[in-house]
Length: 141
Image (cartoon, rainbow, N blue to C red; front, side, top):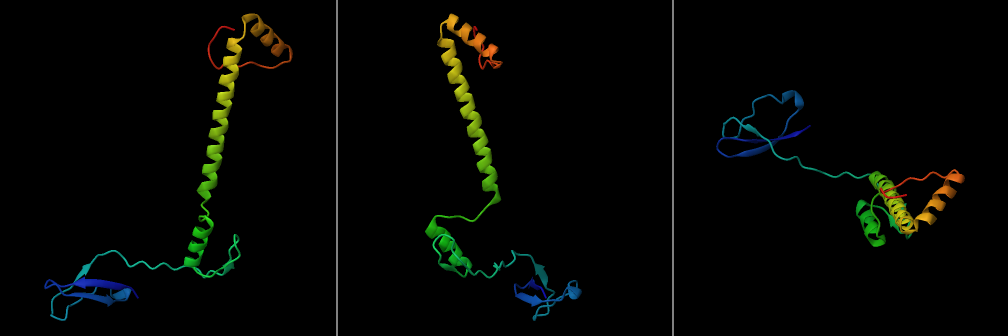
């Protein structure tokens, strides 16, 4: 049965257990005044499932939520979050793309510093081996 809070015009407050079937019934204060329902933040109670396992890091028994938190802190761990794996893969893709760009720019810069005859021979050899060329920057080939 839910608990409702009420207040009368004279400032008296009451908490009452009222069945949902009687939700709309008028409530009266001990002083006779009609009570107005007060809206306030609900009381929150954290209900955790029973824990009983051994820490995978150091083998100590974990039997409560607080013991779990202490185990995390003691071993430098944090609770698993599926988003962490997604973030890891995104960062890995971004790092790979950045490395690929840096390598391409380095190779392109080295090619641009070659004498034009050497550069021409390099492109001819690459074409004879069916290796495509992609220019990262505009330049004289």
